[in-house]
Amino acid sequence: MEPQDERRQFVRLNFSVDVIYHKVPPVEKEKLSLAKNISTGGICLIVYEELREQDALDLEIYLPEDKTAIQAKGRVIWVKEFIIGDISKGKRYDVGIDFLEINKNDLERINKYVFSHL
Image (cartoon, rainbow, N blue to C red; front, side):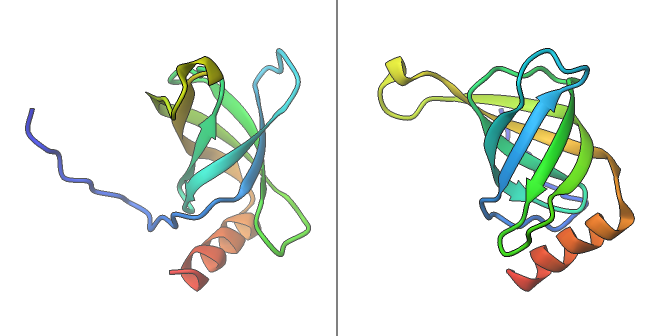
């Protein structure tokens, strides 16, 4: 398999931020996750449950030094399983999510945050 060129539409910041998410419609309690990276187009989460492509999620994103959460709706576009250390501690998943609904002001907050940390 030949390497693929990565062509991102949005500049991403590789920086951890706290995220609370739950599937839509809600089937269980919300879960806390860490974002691996973030952009104005979407977010990559590290989660402990196997999500599927096309799953819809409600997201609360907490940027450091910002007390008000960013509210967004997103859709899972890819999932990659990985294991760190002892397999008995469980699998983890990188989950790529595109934003479907997000307030214009919140997009600007993300944009400002990303570009201030590049």
